[in-house]
Image 1: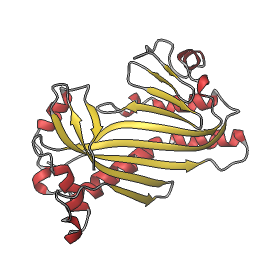
Image 2: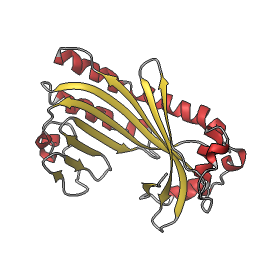
Image 3: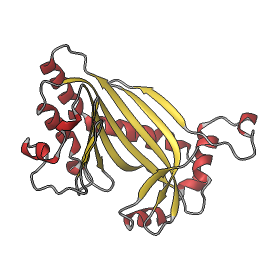
Image 4: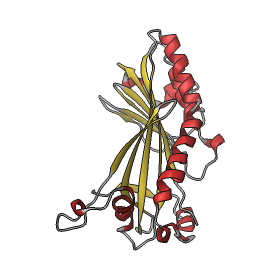
Length: 255
């Protein structure tokens, strides 16, 4: 079968001048109608001097820093109608109309799973299929490792795409190699008027699906076209294993 990207997370980042982290708390989110009043917390909120975070039991997390608001949702195995953070991001911005918004980032993240027991396959995909071969790769006592940072100048926004090898740890402590594709679409809000900036912000976030589709197209139809046939034939193992381990954790490997 053809190797396909597994969507993992969608993150929306709103850059704003002098954003007060103390604004972010569960009461503010619920009383302002940003999130439903019946959402339950997954853990005790974080409220430190330079960061605040509220995480709900559905996996949605909102983090406030002095210069930005970060909204994240796991989107694996859910349909588009269940992706809620674009609307939450819009509501958050509307609740603070006097905030000096500067930019918006639409950041999808996904990965491709590889067979268990073939830990070097992720490295080989990057070094042998995305990089040119040469003596420069053979220096050192161990095989060279690499990550890539790519920039695509698209019509609506540049796409910054990083490609790294990593691993997926399941509940039974099985380690499965993966390749992560971190995407970021960056939009500056150019108007001098706050009301117009808010409209620009709305327009950017309203088109999140177009950004996600562009990201998937580049990864699935361009980058994974370079995937070797023997690796593309990953058995149904990957799909079935991931279905049975809902609480998988991603952790980065040293590269």
